[in-house]
Image (cartoon, rainbow, N blue to C red; front, side, top):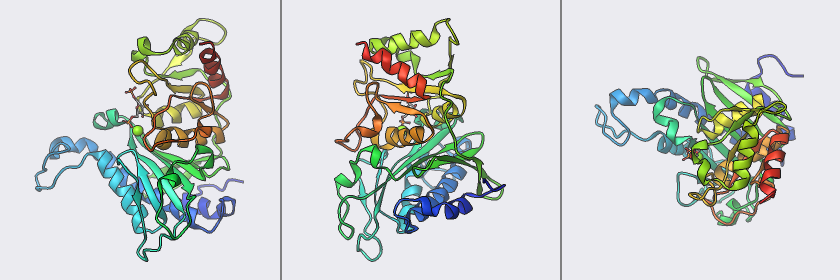
Amino acid sequence: MVQKHQTLGEFIIENQSEFAYSSGELSRLINSIRLAAKVVNHEVNKAGLVDITGAAGETNVQGEDQQKLDVYANEKFIQTLTNREIVCGIASEEMEDFITIAGSKRDHANKYVVLMDPLDGSSNIDVNVSVGTIFSIYRRVTPVGTPVQIEDFLQPGNKQVAAGYIVYGTSTMLVYTTGFGVNGFTLNPALGSWYLSHPNMKYPQKGHIYSVNEGNYVHFPQGVKDYIKYCQEEKEDRPYTSRYIGSLVSDFHRNMIKGGIYFYPTSSKAPNGKLRLLYECNPMAFIAEQAGGKASDGYKRILDIEPTELHQRVPFFCGSRDMVDKAEEFMAKY
Ligand code: AHM
Ligand code: MG
């Protein structure tokens, strides 16, 4: 039974036993993420003021360097996770290489690694449109007590122990899964508390929204072109509605609630697609499956892809099960 006005803190304590290897460490890790998210949210909400205090990359009136929001978000998440001594390594879309966190005792005793896209939807940052943060958590595969290695990060998505996103939208929400369904929490900015507003989120099996950057149409493979034409055809419950924000987190969030498909396919300009497997596709795929949806590269399950490099890109089709099935059907024809 969902308690009225349950906070994220209460929810974490109540559900701790469900977490894999429940030593409380993963709970503390989620706690740190919710803290960093609040700090970043505060800064994102002030983003419009940058215009009057000096643009990113410039010096403001106090003589301080203005930071780009994505760099700021990256620093805040890393700082929070490092200070609280919870993880042994972090990889981020913002950094070329992963970082190793030895801890103050320098014993590399922590067992989780975090991979993240600290501020996704970069083209929307300066124009007051929703952006998001995406995170993905794995248990390390190398022995505790030694520095993390690249193989701790290059694990297939099906090994994730938790994943989530924060959407900085009309309200700020944190949505996450530890493999026992998906729950969404809304921030009350006055109190700084997250409340369980969307318990047990589920994709409608069938949706009516398709989200893709159609400006790239001429560069898409034939299967994608045909699927787009199918979405636009006047037949049965079609044409579908087209909605594309250009922030994966926001497009995904809307589609999960209303029913829809998001896709960023390969194109002649981007032969592997644009989105990153480790920071964007795997966490979103884990959440999608936990919400009864589906995530594919057009042919096979995203979560089963064996990663070969940190910044690997893959085509991404994600959303209501029936819609992703249909898109795969079109892809399989070529
Ligand atoms: P980013 O990590 O540089 O922000 O890129 C990822 C974003 C997604 O959030 C979004 O869905 C997509 O890129 C939009 O790309 P495009 O402008 O090519 O449609
Ligand atoms: Mg991104």
